[in-house]
Image 1: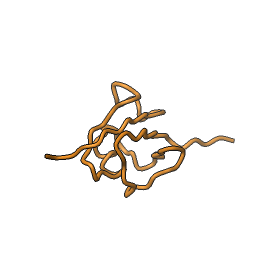
Image 2 (image 1 turned 135 degrees about the vertical axis):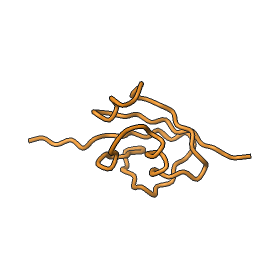
Image 3 (image 1 turned 45 degrees about the horizontal axis):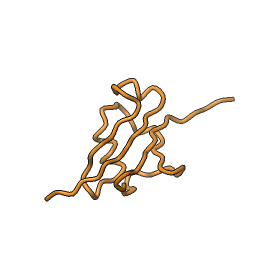
Length: 79
């Protein structure tokens, strides 16, 4: 039996326009990484976005856990 994990994803800014909702739950294999998560979301060019869990920015190889809440946030510039 294949084990899975469920990750809640909140998408902010322009990338959220490609989704029906700004908050989705994604089902992934138990050894999923941030890169696996990004490949499962129908948003173009996620390479420039910040992927954050518990206030910490994740990299592409960060392992995800069941029940994680992930924020996908575009960088903000100002002046």
